[in-house]
Length: 263
Image (tube, rainbow, N blue to C red):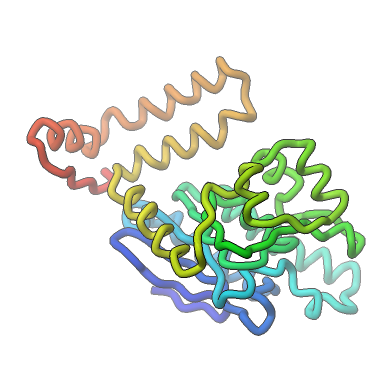
């Protein structure tokens, strides 16, 4: 298993990877190194999808999931250096958004700026009681640049996202649940166990089928209904010739649990 300077990688269950943002001294804010580490971790997992079938993304400690970009590192940066660094942040966001493996966010604390963008970039989130969110970029003279203007409106609706992004206001875990950014809110002690249970349920299913379903769901909103239905059938047809499809039907008829291999 690869080790990283700013991430902790663990395997809390069969075919499950947990990626923990690990800069607690900086409220898990991502610096250049963390962005590079996240690119590496997600791209490595994406290249081994039969082994890693579900990913949990969380932060170390109980104070923060991720405070966004590290402004101490950025203090005094030239325009050119800022733009060069942001190219890495853009690649990081795309590595998360485009990952074919389902990603569960376990949001253990504050998720501000880029941290809120990470929460919106994953497939769905479980959130700790007391966690707070905000897209604060306009307060320092920039805008969300790691997907926030695209992923947040898709999660909570355009009008609500405009209000939050244009004001930079803080919102709570319960508001995130009400508006659709969070799937559930749990006491902090229950957050990871609940995420692991869900990851286990995903990992127990046929990995190719799961990836095709994720892709169809993700692509559909950018298409008209008929195009979306056509895309769904293309994704469906990819599952027909697989060994896992045959194993799933056989296991059902033999009244046993299937043994999916990703083939």
